[in-house]
Image 1 (cartoon, rainbow, N blue to C red):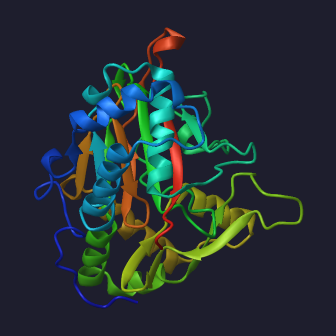
Image 2: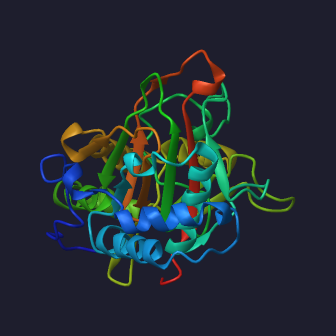
Length: 306
């Protein structure tokens, strides 16, 4: 367990210390031009775009590894590309950052994030709803969580759907200062519900701690609904001590002063560090026209350098 207050501003931040100048980037003319010249080859498994690749790897080191933990590529860089080309560019960036994970039992490496009329209460996954407020890390129900998460905005919502981000180190610092006993509890294991996506004979939950401290780094996994349902499925009710620790964790997450916000626009692409950046969104309202409904494409990425 990490028992020291972290002061590194690239790890510990809030709404007062970070604005979009710390994570919003534009691609160079050379990189965009390189993509234009290779647009007929975007669907290939591999593509030679060395200038573009070098720029993406620079963003990885500056932001995902050594910076605040996220970066957004301004969608205005991609005005000359259609939506299908955008998805392929997004996929290519993911392969530069690491290895794309399969995300579900359908073996999909790129998944559509849109409202499917489902709810968390009925067992749906968060990305299948139009609800907000559920701050989480992606895939907490996996033993090996993705290192990076990518999102490509094809269509923003009619209203709402603003992205929210919280530093896991900020939460850890506040827990250590104000609720140390609860922090100790969060280093113990909890059941995370797999949402029905498991093979015959497998456990329906993963049993892992919310905080780990490995290789001098904090690793966080969290999604409160998955924890609640995981303990119900295992007939192992949360203890008073566990509930208290989770409630204090939630209080810190939902403090607006700890949160930075960004409203993803058409063709914006975002990547963030899933080990130390907790994310969520606000509720959103969709357009009636199916072609205009909010649509994000998501990738889960393993960092090959870890």
